[in-house]
Length: 302
Image (cartoon, rainbow, N blue to C red; front, side):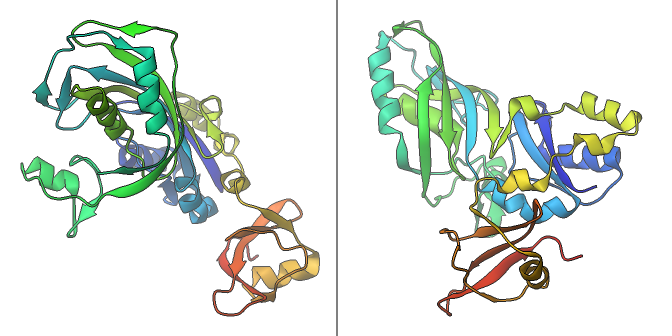
């Protein structure tokens, strides 16, 4: 089995739990996910099977789309609804749509984020959540992330009540903590806040409607049709420029040869080499030899 299985990850399971379960269902060890989802977050989790595991990093690095809900009035240790309360301040005024939209606009583009303590980022060889579980808070390195789009989902004019909330959609790049966005929105409006719900609706080119649930996967396996669950690995590279190559050149590419840069070379740090509709390798310009291209990954060499 070779390809990408677009899984709809249920709430209550870690990404690792999902991989373990799929290995048993599909009876194969070569299974890898493409970026973790928190246990309480549901949504699109493309899973690479067989040779497709070679391109998992490209899906992980692609953009993601989420639908979330921000609730004002209190913050938590985990920045979501499942942590312990840290700070509470009931909302004592009306929050207008114009105010919220201004904040969302300021958080669009390149922004700086500090990873939450309950995250998988490593500091001094340990993941932050390991420190957090011991009650230790340490200094975390900030990072620049890209928010392509951040917009409200519902039509409303004012928010009121002690703990008002609103729903939004965000399209963001690798490394973005959407939980932290919720906290930042609250701070900008003068109140503690947290992410009260979150769903990933798209990862790279894989959308919610492409996904299979575990129940559906079990049905395909029971009917001896597991191959029908898989999408071609080419879908995981659809965001990269492509170059169609001849039979002669394909033989050299399959063997990982360094080549003179073709006249029709596509601009881009990495280019997919396609032969007869199949991606066989990913190439890039040689860093030290102008006019030469070299393989990054060879996917098919048979």
